[in-house]
Image (cartoon, rainbow, N blue to C red; front, side, top):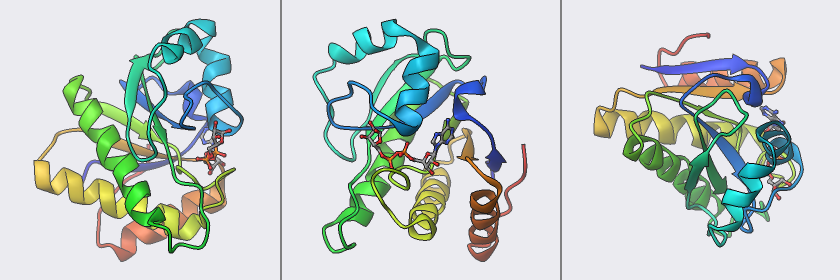
Length: 175
Ligand code: AR6
């Protein structure tokens, strides 16, 4: 299974597309969104302005500008309330729609952060489970040849992702 778990700063990765855990304005913010805009430079914001925002769970693609990645796929995750407001479906949609966008742009490699698990408060374990089960389900369904990196920002998260991957019976890999 072409799923890899790595511990890294997503802005340093020379993949075809990195995914931005954005907000619905697509006009930047903190967390991974802020980091991506800082490295990409002001042209990214300019392109984002022209997109007119994005609904939660949907995804829009831009160029990567000064990033090593060719494209950025922007997807606003759900704000976690109590898990009873459709958060899981919306979060799964983020992963699916990002993968569809990557496929449309003929990407071979894509890197995801743990969407919604920072500022938006999604419990990390549930967010990681949704990430891995959605991506592996999509790759199986579509027989897509994409290599998907799940980028963890610390070793605890990396450990969690690896244990979920094992519990799902998926053979991933590092790096
Ligand atoms: N590389 C990889 N992962 C990162 C990086 C990085 N450089 N920086 C943070 N993370 P968050 P959200 C991890 O808060 O919860 C913004 O203001 C982080 O540890 O970036 O979806 C947007 O504009 C966490 O595990 O995204 C929105 O308003 C994960 O990325 C809002 O935050 C996601 O954390 C979105 O919140």
